[in-house]
Image (cartoon, rainbow, N blue to C red; front, side, top):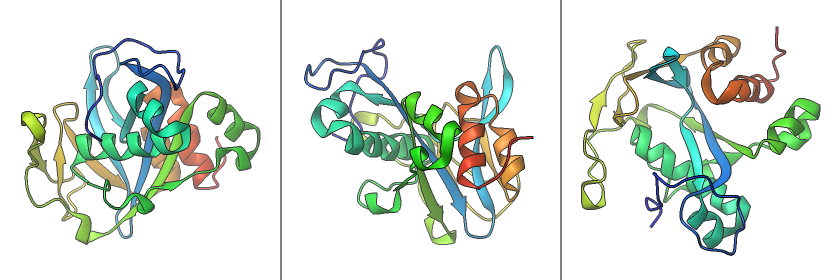
Length: 200
């Protein structure tokens, strides 16, 4: 199941053949950009950091890595995290999750690749707005709510309990700065590289 995996498992060193439960050591993130509204950023509140914004994404499960190999497992995980966190369901439209070739983006891109973070671009438009609260197998999507953006555009997501809201940001540099506290600053760098912007 694309929604399966042990979310509470400990760290897992990433040997693809062992079939152990838990995390693989890889992480997948999706840079979502609406044709009119710009970058989609998820709001979260953390005990130590307070309010911050994040890209959709998270850990690749060891089971996914064992079943699919690195390249496809990272895309499967990106689709899983995206639907879990936002209700945007690309599991039957995986071609829309376009892999970003960080290795082609110089030294900073190489560093991101070495950090075992994988990035995907997803272009969305108004037709992708989520219409219903999702209910997953075995009630796995409990605690969901339909939400409109803090930035007030006419678009809805089905947010998980992990997130308190979302917004769109048209400016690439501002979007990168907004996610600076997420994933050790790597996601800020990824947005800047993807948009061809320089860090200031």
